Length: 253
Length: 315
Image 1 (cartoon, helix red, strand yellow):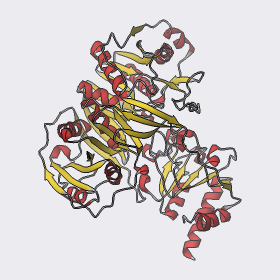
Image 2: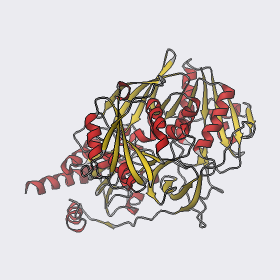
Image 3: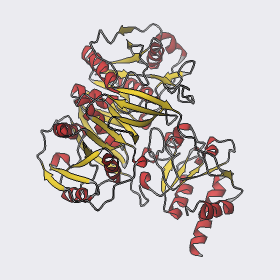
Image 4: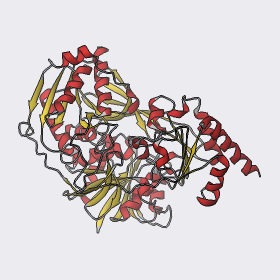
């Protein structure tokens, strides 16, 4: 089984982003960037499937500016075998949108012919939670989203999904798309020797034109603003004061 | 006026509240039709027809839709899409799973987790874990959206008198098969619609210690939530998670216990009416959004609060 893992370079989880004063977007210059956390989980799962003898090759793909290659190096340092960089100058948080990304990934899938695409359920920049489902639709493949467990059984996968009410199990035929949720695994840290090794692994470069995909945005970001700030309140000294305030001032109990 | 199709979420017995919120949002855009695809779900179709603001219900009964997979449901929605300008659903795991598939099959953008409808083609939604509020305008003629349920009041469950039309199922895709569901058994109210929510974080230290949070929740008739850190640490299941990558809640009263208040958590609860924070670290960012902050040991304070509530009830 060959696995394709799309990975996105996003503003790091720990960074508090700033909205630009002109309302055009979020400041990403000189901000720490990292691999989208859910994509790390996807990459980890793919590597584990390979280590368990269920997969033969793990190929990471990233769409974005030149620095997306750093993210691909990280994916390979974790254990992906090789990588594909689809180069674009479009901002990947707003200008290059999920439908266009899904179309680019479809073109990559058609070239690479993977049996499984494992990807994050959501990128923590635009928070759309769409690309995996869209890619599955475009390919006519099944989708097992929000996975917390992936088991390989003959010719398919049994996937446990995180749903609002608890857990759901689905069986999907291969080829398939699986999107990852938080509890699927805990991604490894790349060791120094593996980081060195990853520098020698190949990255193929492609452009959206080469893939023949039209990527113009469907959504215009009219304005990006800072949300209204919630004002902090008061400190209370003890439980009695808290209860009194909740009853008389707030009137919620 | 736009024609809006709301895809109902239900368990064949009862219409989910998320759908009432989606109808509320849909009514802001035009005339609402509700699609009830299920098996033996005639009661749900009738309930949908009684919802205020619903003009029509389309009911499809087939064994395939008893526990539908997104692949089959998307095929059905796409087959009916022609007559509608807007296809909408709640931003639940159901809607999040289904709607992007529908949108891609129609070759249109999907707009996730809408918090405000500004016009036929313009919407507001949060990006970057709620750190930025984006106004987006689509060029697509057909809009496929999911709505944040806490941002739109629910449509009333009565007052409507819609017609119910029955249509046939479409061919199964045979791509995926539902195997089973483990629903977290709980006597407590559902997290996203509870009036009071008590959430625990890493400060609890273990899954067993969540009993402290549960004890308080039981006294208040509250739902129990958790921060991502607590889920990550394995204290509680993922369906407890409140935040950017979990559930969005906006109760009357939110009590954060042992939660530091990472931005990812705040994204899921900062629209609560009253926020109470109990944390031993007085520098914790949760205090910056809390209406009432109490610094101290949660293992002393929370049981005290539980007892005090018990006594005031008895009195």
